[in-house]
Image (cartoon, rainbow, N blue to C red; front, side, top):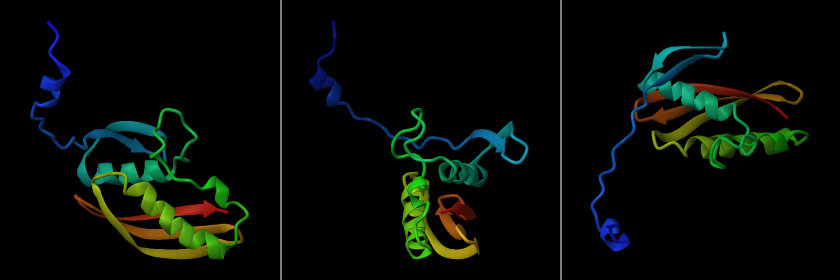
Length: 134
């Protein structure tokens, strides 16, 4: 006998936080070796989100990644505030990230900007950066 839908929906559910335990990436050497957890896993999650173009990979949801392609050719006066908004939007989908602030922009050369910022997570603060060609 199949339980009724109404009875199933009336059940109490317990929500638990998922662990952050994951495989450890070494981006410099293109290796995955060992495991990362807590703050180290957050650094890795931030790196992955900021290096994945949103909507380009079918395996990721539309909420994952950051949109950068359409910034090419735009003036720096548009790119800098837009980067702040897009970085914040891309990272705050992760429930472990509480806020992002202290944005600093440095023009490295024509069409290249470096953004430094602080990501406040439930495990502690992460100093992060992203270099963007526009």
